Length: 144
Image 1 (cartoon, rainbow, N blue to C red):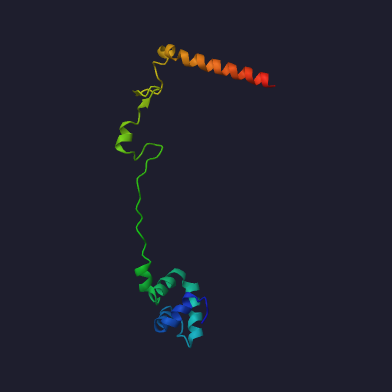
Image 2 (image 1 turned 90 degrees about the vertical axis):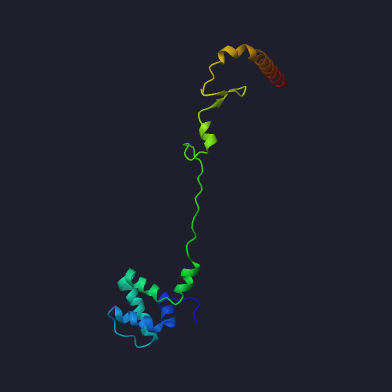
């Protein structure tokens, strides 16, 4: 037996009586032998395309097996949040427009309005950063 077989050959081998009836249904003369049946099934498929393929599927010898074991698996979709804010969880939606400042305090404003009034408390950090930067510049110049 051949390794690869066409749909028409498979039907002609496994269901010759229904294949012969299908050929006659489409107005062809009854097949004289196995090779004639295959040729007429090919011609039928070529000339009548979709209608012929639907009829061939109906007389396919493995139709029940294919329908029972090749049923589509239902796809479960999961709601995930996106950057637009759609499908967000309730907690995320409630905190959507809230921001944290440097100290971790919750604010509804993107810009922290008390930054200018709090600069004096940042003075030691600014001074230490300036000293470290200056010492690095001096160290790099002396390394040359």
